[in-house]
Amino acid sequence: MNVLGYAAHSATDPLAPFQFERRQPRPDDVVIDILYCGVCHTDLHQVRDHRGVSRYPIVPGHEIMGRVRDVGPEVSRFKPGDAVGVGCMVDSCRHCAACGSGHEQHCEESPTFTYSSIDRHDHTPTFGGYSESIVVSDKFVLKVPEGMALAGAAPLLCAGVTTWAPLRRWKVGQGSRVAVVGLGGLGHMALKLAKGLGADVTLFTRSPDKEADACRLGADRVVISSDAAQMAAWKGRFDLIIDTVPYVHELGPYLPTLAFDGTLVLVGYMGPLQEQLNTAPLVYGSRAVAGSFIGGVAETQEMLDFCGRHNIASDVEVIGIQQIEDAYERMLRSDVKYRFVIDMSSLKR
Image (cartoon, rainbow, N blue to C red):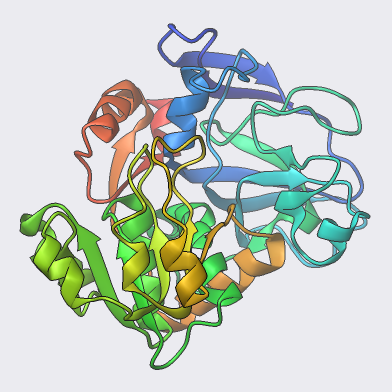
């Protein structure tokens, strides 16, 4: 299948039109016409090879919303015309302990990611959602709830499930006390989802001017994390803190605000921290620091269904694909509320 997309050919090249071949559909495949694709920080990191693992050419995009064009003979869950999504993964080994427990993102043989990865069957490169169409095994295709707006749903497949997974793992519900560190693409979804689950929700931020927006998104209050007096007033309060900050920062100020047996979960930053973490608040309070990485297919479907029932979507700015380089620069400046989504019909303009 010959497909048009946008690709980068090196870490210094801008994204530009790119014709490439999708694989011929297998019996369990779904062929999807892509309507919208969210823009994730990971897209920028991969395009510019910030982690030194990128495979070029790269067609980014792993927050894909579209409609089914065709299905293979072994597919029964989908039919042409269905609204569907594809997230961060398109395959896994399907037999290890992680896959068997519904956590394909932790596949012991490594998941096959939606782009800049290698297909585990024919060993060709995977290309993502900045393109006209995609071919994916039905086991990694998600049903979109009836009536859900596709543009606002696209970032749910990464930002949404990344914050949903820890909320579910730590059993957040009515009366839970949850804090969110940082108000960006991940943070705004954490506020919405925690509030939707019935939690009392607090935003930690260094920016007082974010209060009104945070409360609109679901926060019950805002605490200025650089104000020692405000932080001290919230000592021992939170069952769960979801830390969405995507760069090096100190965890120390937040740990005393955890309740007994509370947990701070990192979802935004992967890498070394430049602080000597004081373990006393952990030891004396039976507290923990943990990490969480996107979510499995079943978790993602559960999250989509929840959002459909509760009318939850991402706050998005829809752009044409020709604006992608400007969007990356604005994303680096945090100049978006709160996610960019590409209208893929712009490929034809």
